[in-house]
Length: 129
Image (cartoon, rainbow, N blue to C red):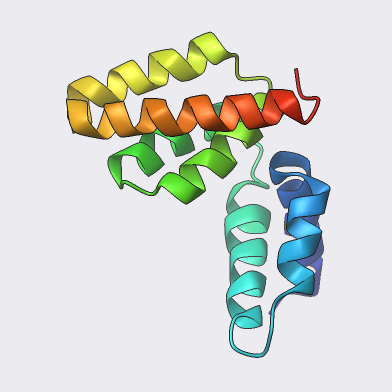
């Protein structure tokens, strides 16, 4: 693995998902899932999120749409909070989810709205704005 790319990815991952969350994920990794932590950090966060052609805000909105379409509620909630950290407004999140309703189906959007509301409430309760 590429240690430089891992470190870059770790920095980006912490800035989007929150330092405490990422450090807990890495610290709790064991022999079984540490290779996955490294893979995700290096390639998802370092190699792709580290590219400059799209802003973090744009990547966050794309992730919200894709995770909604894939019905991945746990990941969606993490990325809604990350989107808020990246400057995506609640209004923009709502508009992404309305787009999901049209292109992915109303049931996907209904679940995603519910999960996004929970994530926004948790984010705001923790002091996020």
